[in-house]
Length: 558
Image (cartoon, rainbow, N blue to C red):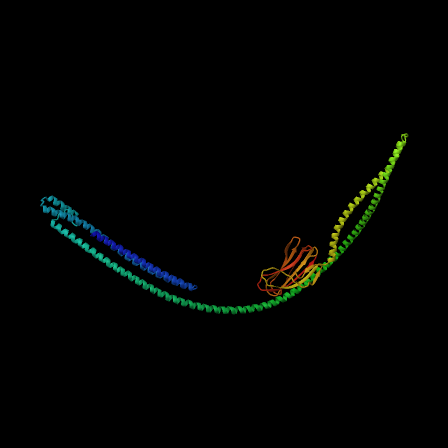
């Protein structure tokens, strides 16, 4: 029975602990869900009103304070409840231990009493066994001192007292269990009350939060309206100030632009005068150089003509000599043929004469030597004539080789003479042309074409339709480009040189205009070969279309 009570007490304690843990878990879960809802609502509200961060911080601080208060109260209640449970559990365990000890003592006493009753009923007069049993009983009794020897009546009374105490202990245990149940019920009611208080506090916090949120929203809307009104007023004021400043700047800029235009017109006139003076100087220098070149070329041409006349005389003499040599060769050939025929005839006659002489000298042996010497003397002039003819043929072939060298020199001189004659025929090389073009495309290079008829053009090939200048002769050329635009923009023109010998195109110089009606120009010298080309390309880096006035000129200076 006692073990059943102990198990029941342990089960009650474990059930109470489980219930408290479950209630605590549910309370924490409900509190976490509520806090999550409040935080999510606050975040949604702060997303709609992102600019008011201080209000969100206040709401967050209030939520944190409420959470801290609730957690503190919950922890305090849990600690108190758990400490009470621990105290009750210790008391129950201590009473159970005391009850078990008393039960053991009571069992030993009952055993001794039963033994005593058995001995008494048997009529044993041996006092030693009874004394031993009583001594053992008195030793087991903790409330009596050792050495006392109570009687059987006292022992029975003591047994009755022990049983009464045991009943008292049982009643106390039942009362304590009843008290624990009542405390558990009160704890349940307290937990319910705490839940109710927490729900009420949460409702109050929700009401306060909604009220504060509404107030904050109202304040934020008022602040936004005020800020919008202030911003609109400030924007109007800024627009007014900007319009006034823009008008003032336009006035100042118009005055400055007029001044700049006046200064630029004066500077342009000065530049034009300087350019005209420089052009006049260049023209004077060029005329002097051309006169000098003409003089030098005329002298060279006269010298070349004299050399050519002298060479032509020599060629005529050589050709006449060759003709005479040919005639002489033909005559000599005819004579040689005649002489060979005559020699053949003479040889034939000589053979005939020799045969006759041999026939005659058969009897005249002494006259043979004399006749042979006479014959050898007649052959000597013929051999000299053959040597002379061979020498004349050698001199004739030498004259032919000299004539070929002279013809090669004449070919080289003819190229130089043709170049000099072409330069004399071309004379001054140069041109000057103007055009107006509207450029629309952005950051795209396009070639400038469709020039007006050149004002000045001499000795060159300038195609006004394509805008390309082709060099007629080799030399050094001075190129000039000028650009003027009708509005403030960024326009650039590039002077390009097409070298046909190397099959490449190079940039010579550029001129960039950014202010309307303000001319910009550039000049550069370029060495060109016959057939090379010069042309202009244009590009724009601002989006608005622009009308451009372009001048292009070139002059050969060396």
